[in-house]
Image (cartoon, rainbow, N blue to C red; front, side, top):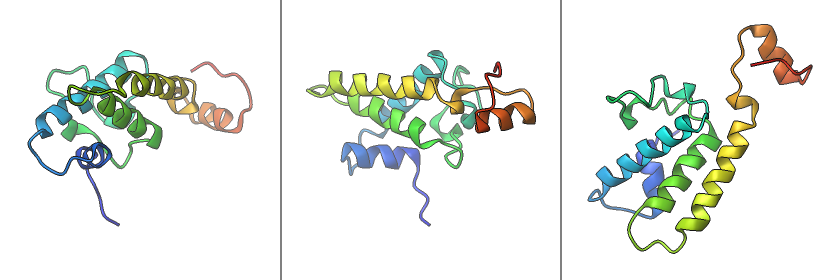
Length: 129
């Protein structure tokens, strides 16, 4: 299995083959993660706090990165990359829709005990996160 970095995945989505704009892309990835955390989306998969000034995309635990969170990051970057982006508004609406899905998912819940995790996974009640 080939391990590809989040930066490389985003560059593929953008169809960027050079390294000239890596800094801009990294800034947008960081902004997407910050935006997700700021809007209340759980980012525990980061393993670090994106609100910390020393946060870097190198801190992202890509093995723990949920597919929907990755899709949100890619969509955010695609919406904000470059200057003449006719699709920016549509892509930001898509990003917001993904955040709604993430915010309403079990992925975003914070459980205190193993019993709460099991009950939530089985749909056995409305346990408070």
